[in-house]
Length: 180
Image (cartoon, rainbow, N blue to C red):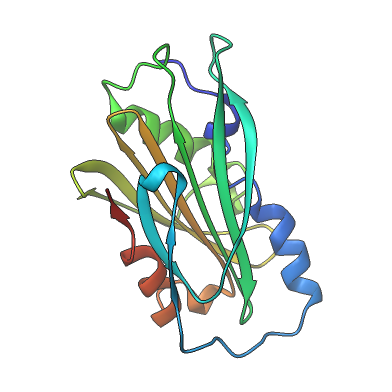
């Protein structure tokens, strides 16, 4: 299987937003959420505000460059990150569970004891997905949903205080993902 370095480190914006979050006062989360259309109408996700959108060049293990779209928002003491990419043809996407597992393994390096506390495998919109939860070494917690369907990669990351990972905001964000 050939994966890109950045995809294995999916939600790479999270460590940066964790530092920013620790320096800000928590705000009240707005009652109005917005449906955010991800790259090329591949999916939609709801966020309690309009996120920043950045496109970075990623590359496969064989060197093919492809765009990774990242949408991030910090509000109400939480960080929301949605990322998506369409893998190039040199990435073997016939084993989506292996790609999702590799992404989880890459992120686990930043977790307490290098392990996820919980991983729940499921089907989301016909794609293979894992909803995971773990504590970060800085005292915050991360909930991450990683999904692969055909050549489409999607990752949702929710970062904040450990008690919020199964709260209303986290649930709404994670469950709002809709594939096109």
